[in-house]
Amino acid sequence: MSSLETRPDEVTCGDGPAPEGQVTVLAPREVPLGGPRAMRVRRTLPARGRTMIGAWCFVDHYGPDEVGRSGGMVVPPHPHTALQTVSWLFSGEIEHRDSTGVQAVVRPGELNLMTAGRGVCHSEVSVTGDEPHLRVLHGAQLWVALPAADAGVEPSFQHHAPEPWTVPGGRVSVFLGTLRVDGEQPRSPVATYTPLLGAEVVLDPGARVRLVVDAEHEHGVLVDHGTVAVGDAVVERAELGYLAPGRAELELAAGDEGARVLLLGGPPFGEKIVMWWNFIGRSHEEVVQAREQWQAELGHESEGRFGAFSYPGGESLPAPELPQVRLRPRG
Image (cartoon, rainbow, N blue to C red; front, top):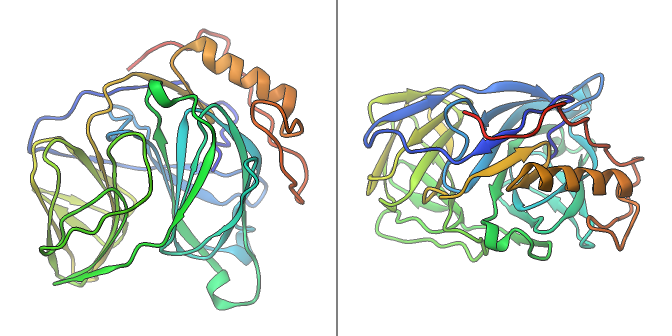
């Protein structure tokens, strides 16, 4: 997914952890995906005071959205650098195309992970049709920052359909990393460049589910629907609860209607990154160079930094204008 803000802020990421044991609840802000009938997404990362959870640096939550009414998701070819995009759906389908030659469909309960590395471009468009499972689009788009040593790797694409694990009070699907669940330890085979946890947890009404987690990781609990008590905090729909390192066990308690959450985790990233529009860099100059190269190519140069692919929907997405000041650390 692209950030389609016309005046995107520069974000310097690399937070210090909150006090151990404390749960910080991050409220979302609404961002349009562009167009006259723009589908709106709810963004919780980056946020003021918290820009990363492990290497997770971007969290968008969207839907349920009636595709026939809103037009769904239509994101033309756009670039990325030094990150991985993680697509996870609850309903609907999205066609993904990218300059590595991949054409794939994102489906509910299946992970699509694209590594941008030195540079890639891709598009995301809702699959439409009269079938009931295509009428409502609902899911999350997340980004993972690559460490400096791996920021220039070759772009690539991975797909994984995790087997849901049934546990007392719900079920768990681990799509990245590993998690101990009811004595079992489901593990994802998907490769990442820092230790990560990504899992969907569905809770029955009134259920309490205990998960064994890595105490060296910080964690985020994104609530898709329902309300969930995490420690001494209640996290509402579309909010993101942040937990600092130090917990070896995490208890999630659902309200009367049950709940569904995405559990994200990883060790504190340990590096500062500058994130502007769809680019991650370590300096102002890196971001400016990436923007200039994309504007020169706009997805038309197969041998260029970002490559090219056939996109039936029209032209590529131009980059916004840079701010009139040097991109610099803040916050």
